[in-house]
Length: 226
Image (cartoon, rainbow, N blue to C red):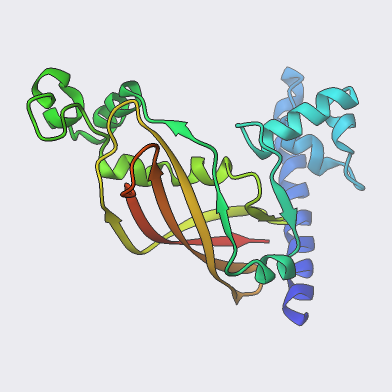
C-alpha cells in the first residue's frame, strides 16, 4: 500500500513537471495557432474530460477505443490486485493471418531475405512446400496478438508497457504464408519491482490454424509502469 501511495506522489510531481513543459511548448506554438493534444490535456487542472478534448461525446468514445486498441477490441481494464488474482488464467487471442506482404515487409526491414521466406517458386521445392514466416516475425507479432485478446487483463492506471525480454523462446513449427495464428497466454507471475513499476511473466503458445503442433512457445516478460 505504501508503495502505491508513493506512486501517486511520483505521478503528481511528474504531472506538474509535464504541465510546466506543456506551457513552455505552448508558448512556442501560439504564433502558429498550434497546440498539441497532449498539451491541451496537461494545461488544464482539473483535466478536461475526453469529449471536451476531442469534441462530441460520440467522437470521444470512438477515439478512445482506437487509442486503447487499434483492433477495436474492448480490453478488460482491472486493478493491480485483480491482475495478481489472474495468475494462472489462460486467455486466447483472435486469429490473425500472416500474409506474404507481411513476410516481405519483415524481410526488407531485417535484411533476412532468405528464399524460403520471399521466393514462392523456390520455396515450393523445399519440405515446407511454400514460403514461410520468419520465426522472429512470429515473435514480433506478440504485441498485436496481446492487443487482440479481449479478456487479457490490462492495468487500468498503467502509463506504459515495455517488453523486457524472454526467459525462453522456441520456434517449433513453420508458419506458412497465408496461415492463421492465435496466441494462448497464461499469466505465470505478476510482481512489483519498485515503486510504480511491475513485471508480468506469461507463457505464450502460438497456435497455427489446422495444425496440432504450435508455431512458437515463449515465456515472455513485460514491465508495466503505473
